[in-house]
Length: 346
Image (cartoon, helix red, strand yellow):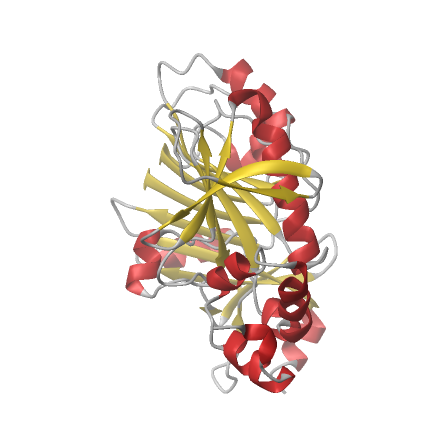
């Protein structure tokens, strides 16, 4: 099919029904087609929440966008390990790069030698910036701290499934890895020890969003050092923050003594004749893995908190809704004073 022979409206209709990952493949055909895609699909690109690089434990890197196409990623970076006779070369942002097209699912394979890993990724990333625009959010999802994260424009870093146990001796290597990225959007970590293994100044506690699994809620003292905005804590057994706007803590082995707990934190109550507002926030990090995709359970917002119980911070009179359900404690901060919060229900 020769796309350029069709009228502009027909071209637009065809492209509108092509999956976003296929659009990216098509953009390499010619400069003219690339321009048509960029001009006709501008609104569609605005609906993409982010582009994510995922680096697995073997150092293999795949790229997809969210919402993700159901049939595969846009491209994969592959280290040269054997010669193929079906490469094709393209000059991308000034660098000649070897490509192959995967048959199923269809996506580009981008090949690089070990010494040019960062330069190849950077060239492709610059192409993304031209294709999607500078306003697009780009994320790097690392699954360990042995593979370096390239320094790329508009890139924020995420670290998934970091396990810190009794025999954890690589804190220096971890901190060097964390220091290599100025912005950490999300860190998911498992503490299998009750021993303080990380410094209170660790960059782990500076991430915007954390999900922490640990035995006790007090050791390690993750919340005491946390400086970010959103936290989800899961612990086996059941502090003041200036930036924290959402917290969910799950105690796996018992329920929280609700009345005693609420009394201890000085809770206030909305009258029974008023309907409490529902607190929710856009997630700093959206979990977008294969399991959540299959289940259709990708959530862009924090779990809603609808509660007639709230607390007021003395320092600035800000209100937070508080909810306890079984072994889960949820805490959501409103950008409102107590007077403004109560007026929402008038």
